[in-house]
Length: 117
Image (cartoon, rainbow, N blue to C red; front, side, top):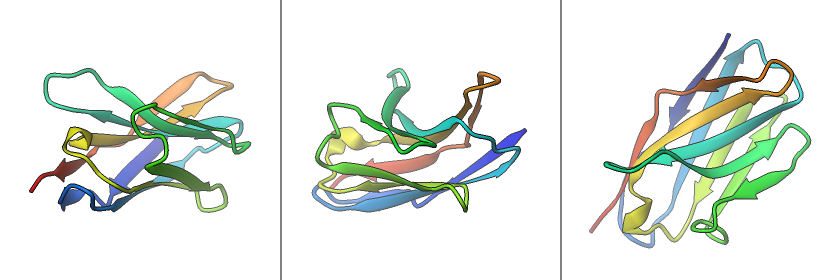
């Protein structure tokens, strides 16, 4: 079992910044991928950014150059630094963990990010 807890969401103005954090606990093994997904009302959940335990990163085209994912393998945490936020970034952001060997995927409870004037 893996438990994921997100924090750092909130209300920000367009152009502002937020930093999301996710703490993982439980049976964490490598190799794995930790990622951030988001889901806006009426839309499907989409990948925002991911980072493997080896350090390889992936970003959605819509956030490239604005968001940065980072992780601390020793602490089992992953963060998402979000800069130059746009109203279309408004969504519930979910932390995701995927264990490669078992193919099991775990999700956090989500944290709301609202970008509005």
